[in-house]
Structures are given as C-alpha cells and as structure tokens.
Amino acid sequence: MKGLKRAGLAAVVGFAAATVVTKRFYDKKKEQELDEFLLPDESEAIKIHIDSPSSLKEDIDSLNASPVTFEFGLESKEKAMVFQDLLSEKGLSSNIDATNFSVEVLFNDEVNDVSKQSLYENLNELCQQVNAQYKGCHLK
Image (cartoon, rainbow, N blue to C red):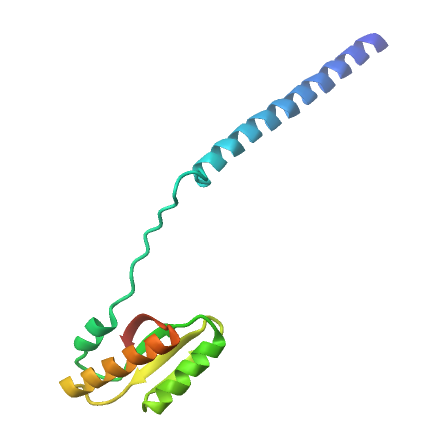
C-alpha cells in the first residue's frame, strides 16, 4: 500500500513538473513572438509619421478675429524666457509653460492686413533668433 501511495505521489509530482516546464516553454515562445512583433529589426530603418505643425504664415493669413493664441516650443526654460523677453520688446503678451518649455503668444489687436504682416514678421524673426518651433494656434 505504501508503495502504491509513493508511486501515485511520484506520478503527481512528475506530472506537475512536466506541466510547469511545458508552460515555461510556451510562455517563452509567446514572449519571443511578441518581441518580434513589437520590437523592429535593428537593421531596418524605423519610419514614424509625424504630422507637421501648421504653418505660421498660413495661420496668420487665415485670421479673421482676435484674440488668438499662438504656441511655440523651445529647447529649454532659459530659451523660453529669452523668447518671452524678446516678445515683450515687440509689444506681444506671452505665457511660459515651464514643464514642456512652450510659450503661448496672445494676439489681441485688430485683425487687418497690416497687423497680420507685422505679426508674422515679428514672430518669424524671433523664432529664428531663439530656434523656436511653431506648434499651432487657437482662438482664445
């Protein structure tokens, strides 16, 4: 009787061990398949499609009402502060978001051809000075 119990226990232990080994084998195989699917081959170039931001000139030309907020991205907080100082010298109001180094410029003047041209020239010149990237605009 004891021999039968030991044989039964050995069979249960053997079956459990075989189940664990088989599960680990299939889990590892599934993980490799998932890695091949999610991680690109290093020899292949990674292509990412990024929508280009709106053109500053196009957005300013399409203005027909104010106030409007223009958003610009910069590389650092220091450059954002310099950009804000330059904007204030041109008479433009702005706010800095220090967490993502962006500056919002508020345009609240009358919208006409002269003001649009002046706004574009000022913003374009300042963007080139501090290497700011235009991200878009929205009505306030």
